[in-house]
Length: 198
Image 1 (cartoon, rainbow, N blue to C red):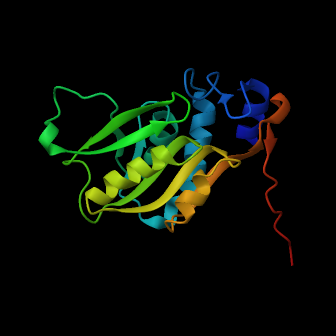
Image 2: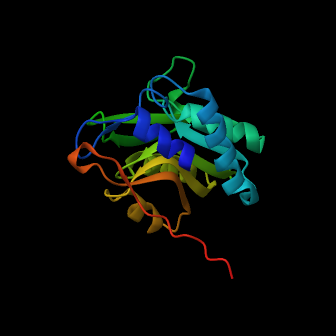
């Protein structure tokens, strides 16, 4: 997605060979126009999957997943990282997730009232690195007896093993920007194959 790639180049900051800072438009300040376009694109990609729920983890995944869910006319669920007094802990699905960026584990939870057996769930997240967040959400969906119909990622760090891990589970992955390298403080994108006109 060229608009997203341009935002990464113009407003992203490479902090190391493994960390890209995008707080100017995605995970601190939100570019609402760009998030709307991202939501449209995810909805277009997954429109035929008969999605009944969209799920993400708070908080950086909420903006793009909200726009996608709005386009698909489905509810958006965000897994909570903090326990809430309004949630009965006996009535939640939970999974332990490791954050590459924060270098810590957190317990993410979703109320059992929100995902039901037979739901067709689309997972949306801001980054794909080692696949830990996605795996945690998939675990929650499976606990509910629902199925994951696909994984939409805003920015994929293709030099890490997240895609491979998810594809080995038979999942469809759609990433809007795939980064091949952050070496020498430069963002290099994966070259996408060009469709041939016959």
